[in-house]
Amino acid sequence: MSAMDGPPGLIDWIPNLLRGLGNTMLVTVLATILMVVLAVILGLMARSRRMPVRGVARVVIEFFRGTSLPIQLLWFYFALPMVGFQLNAIFAGVLAFGLNYGAYGAEVVRGAINAVPRPQWEAATALNLSSWQRMTRVVWPQAIPLMIPAMNNLFIQLFKSTPLLFAITIIDVMQMGEAFRFAGGNSTAMYLLLMVVYFVIAYAVTFLMNLAEAAAKKRLGQHEGVRSMFRTRKPVPQEVTP
Picture (tube, rainbow, N blue to C red):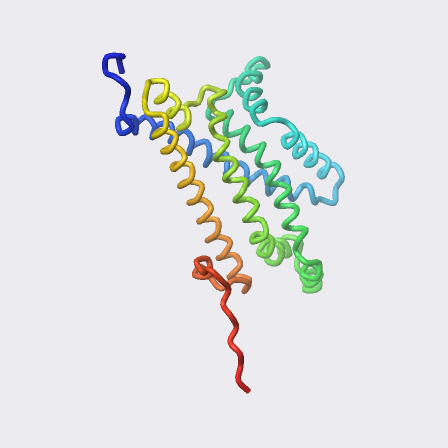
């Protein structure tokens, strides 16, 4: 748009925002998948009886939790090419976000598994279940509802951190909003729109995770189903007349 055209209108800028949102969601979805996979693998490794396996898991977890996400982004995209590894910007972003939040997710997985009551483990052993059967039939069904709320927080934090992608040349929805401001557009309207976009997506993710938690608890007989999510208070038990 030339200077003679005047400042852009918010409606006219929607296609640009959608292109930026496409990059934001692409990195968010792929990084979330990587995060979950790494969280499960590292979380299980951190509980291994073998010291070398636990040691590797602890080093990876503490390294990526203890270093800055922006530095990890810059390292993957700008430093690796100096040693012969050239990464696509999207791939570098997915890798950095997945490893960083996967390290936090590993502690969520480990803690949820450890929170399964010990008698449940003992009962599974008494039934002569194999290690795989104990994990898939007894432990995981009880651990998943415990880890969903914390995982949801990590999903939201990952999504809200995507404006950092600008550091490795990825134009996300936030940067498209900034470009609108630099072009002379209405900053108040644009930032309000961006807040609404982030809120709607974050709330949608939270709602889906609440559904997943309700379904997981219902399978264990610990939840009254999806309808209970919309109640403002717990039902009062009725007194039984003798």
